[in-house]
Amino acid sequence: MEFVHSFGFFTLLSLISPIDASDSWSYSGNTGPSYWVNSYATCGGSSQTPINLEGGEYDPNLGNITFTGYSAADSGTTYILENNGHTAKVGFQSSTSMSISDGGLSGTYKVLQFHAHWGRNGSGEGSEHYKDGKPYPAEIHIVHYRNSYADSTAAVDQPEGLAVLGIFLEQGSVENTKYSPFINALSNIPDSGQNFTMSGFALGDLLPSDTSKYFRYSGGLTTPPCYESIVWTVFNEPVSLSMTQMDALRTLNYEDGSTMQDNTRPLQNLNGRDITASWDGAHHVAVSFALILLVFVFHLF
Ligand SMILES: *[C@@H]1O[C@H](CO)[C@@H](O)[C@H](O)[C@H]1NC(C)=O
Ligand SMILES: *[C@@H]1O[C@H](CO)[C@@H](O)[C@H](O)[C@H]1NC(C)=O
Ligand SMILES: *[C@@H]1O[C@H](CO)[C@@H](O)[C@H](O)[C@H]1NC(C)=O
Ligand SMILES: [Zn+2]
Image 1 (cartoon, rainbow, N blue to C red):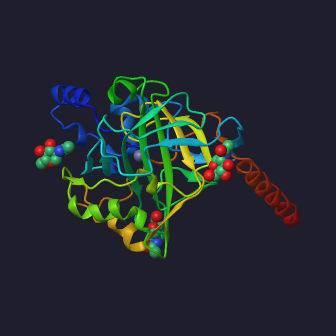
Image 2 (cartoon, rainbow, N blue to C red):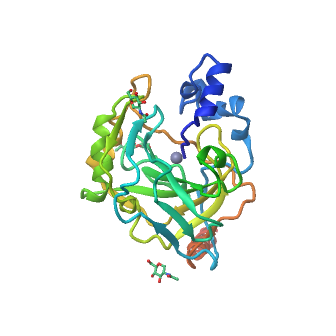
């Protein structure tokens, strides 16, 4: 998850450092993920993201998430698409009426932005979370902040201040027209720092058809400053995009002009955190897999 640097934070960094805040970290080399902790201590914390989602324990109290304002374009905000040097992000204003609640969330969370993480092709790695030990080629994050805070800046470092929805993307053979407004607009922002005002579209179009099955755990931002402030929801069902649509993500460039790809943080340790699931089945799959493995091992020896 990529959080827009708050204005205050950005200004502070520009005062104390000649380096632009957006330049101080990257996904490779000596500003890559293993170095983030040197400048952002929280990146070395014990509740970091992403993680491998496996064996989620069924929690009947989770229930369905309620999506408000997700089913049609929101006329109360502009949809600003931006290449911020790390990802393609669509940001919304606080006047938006789009929010989520229920689903085990302890309040209402207002939509702030969504963005993507992706790899080098449509069949390899590229998602931040893994499921049952395997990555997907890309992942969408829809970022929300708790509406009990004055704004997103106040919420960003608070426990459960943010709620992020993770959506796995896989590559299929047909165009997903629900994703076309986002994907087609990417051609307007090839270079870092560019932005483009999109036409509105229904945010619900980004969701998988079954939103009742999801994983839940406590984690943080997958980019500096890695605040451990996020109630994470990752849907079990992936969304399928065509190869052309997947490839459109890789038409963007990083600040140095190289192809934007592999903008993913490596897996972090679970450190004893609970992973729960909204449905009865996530755990059983893992258990039966372990049983099959056990039987297999017994056959070998
Ligand atoms: C896709 O990318 C993965 C790395 O994520 C690589 O191992 C694999 O060879 C690539 N496949 C193709 C067809 O290029
Ligand atoms: C969009 O880009 C223009 C031109 O570079 C810039 O002046 C403006 O502040 C940007 N807007 C946003 C919302 O980032
Ligand atoms: C939750 O959503 C699923 C799928 O949309 C639906 O089948 C189920 O009835 C819903 N559960 C409740 C309690 O509303
Ligand atoms: Zn993200």
